Length: 635
Image 1: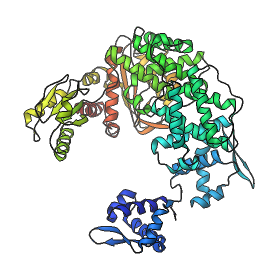
Image 2: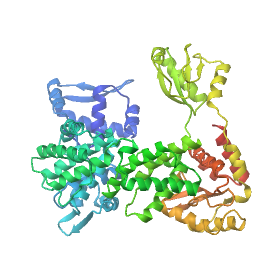
Image 3: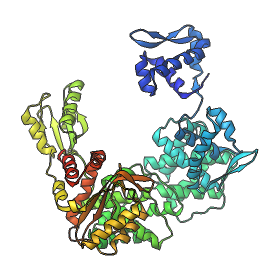
Image 4: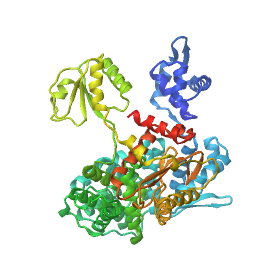
């Protein structure tokens, strides 16, 4: 039996296991109670011949009623599955991509529209995003009258596009039905153990994600090879012997799974994928410098000369960057894209390290044919950010992390945790453990310990708290949570009413830069080269921090004196593909750079506090400042 849509399949699974009221069903399925009743009626109509119905039990909810146990048992044995019908625009785009990337024949939108119960016009609208996605891989779709639409491009590009898409879907939901549709049934499970053995025998170390990605690529390769689409004319000899050995072993596994001989190009492309995701030892003496050494030195020298942060003597940072960049160069050389799931967080929490690294890599790009993506830059930023924290005590600002030691019942633990978060919402309770588990710890990783029982203090402060804490106990916790912040002082020193503006007329980003830069130049804050540098920085990558906040600034520290120009735009300013409502133009001088870096933490705070709507509503500088101070006071 096949369900006409995914929701009916979900409804069937839910009600087989428990009795649920229609309000709860509506909540879980994100529909109205009226839709739930209609779905129940449709489901009962489908199940009429299978010996089972769902009936409403007043006061309890819908529950299963088995009329014929034999027919119901037969239905369960069949493992009823849903008809895979995409329901949203994003799902349709993914389904269309998989169909084009795996089909040997032309596709007609009319046929797909009938299959998915949508209009042809709807699919035609979705095709714009499909074409945009394919363009990134130099793939095109050609339309021929009466025949339909067909995908054209190199086999290497087709595999790269399909693997990246499936990797994204797998990260979001490993049970996504598209994974099964795009790959041979069970091929990933059959490949996992043999591939792990290949890497182990060849002494090639990969991260769990790297190993999973290669397994996914191999599953794609098995399907393409078995269907008669091999790779041709590709060579990669500049890899270590261990990688060559691993690629040979993996190629033998793929040949067995595909049932066809593999070309030399297949093995060479496997070498590239393995080398791009290999974990190398970080000992500098074990690394062949090549281009990686030059790029590491260039980045660190650029940061030293343009931002006054000297990381050139940090041997650990140099080794870590060199280890990462060696495999990164392999990826950028062969245009292998590794998604960076932390990219948006890195931009928000390491804004200074992001700007430094981005500026250095962008300048490096003028002297090399390589194009380094934002994802790759994000990985580099993590290393630079750690180096800045180690030497200058700046970088990622995290909330206080606490270990909760509690030997009481689960309900008491939840009550204590809820009370702590209500009193100190910035607290992050990373672990809740029992007293005996605490005693076995050699040291505590968190910032401090809160306990309901007396215990020996280890390497971090400890606060004893009863399930119903006294004011004194809460004050002791507060002393550890609430640390002295310097950001209110930053607000006083670098923000003022003369550099505050509310824009109530349409204005472009470029015109805004010109207007603000000319004022700052006339006042002696910046020189004539400031505007060009701000424009150049914006062209590299958008300075949008997120949630409508933009931080335009120059490449390097070009200001004579530090100041922040604040612009509120209630109607919004077009900012690339986004819209900015709060703009902070930063002009930072070398003489005040170390103190001014705290400004970045202030912006991250405004973002975390979701302060944009309140900032937009400010009528003048005084009200803007009041909102900013209110946000800071909660930390």
